Image: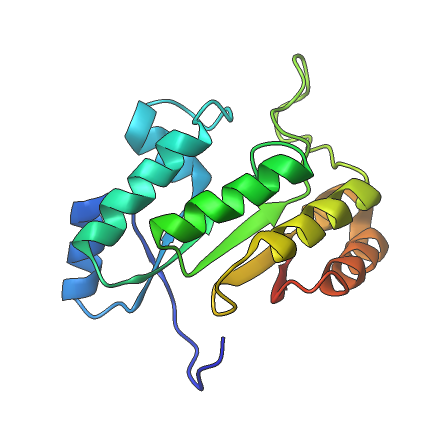
Length: 174
């Protein structure tokens, strides 16, 4: 974020894909939660991949590559305390940045596919404040991510984005 160029990340999912991305000139990699679930468990993204499994995959990628890695930390694997642990684990694993989202995960049984539910704004603000407090390296980028545009419309997304920005995160991902 401190640079002067706009960079597109390569989608990476394991050590080999990170090395390939790096060999063709990418400087940034991105590991999505859905991709990690697909490649680690050969399962759809139903939020059953654990933080430990995710962090281990990140460590394997970072051991094999010098890419700056941004990861999708989903909902932070639970409440604000879990978010703190998520930040600690993923920072220790070597990520350069992570997004934490306001979608209620895992989805409730019987919830219509594609019908996201959001956690309360107050709970999400608490999670993001916890993430900022847990961060040790100020260069590690924290992104507050919201699905509010799809769920609450423009007004809800703007309200959430402003509240997220006030927590001290580095960016908001709408």
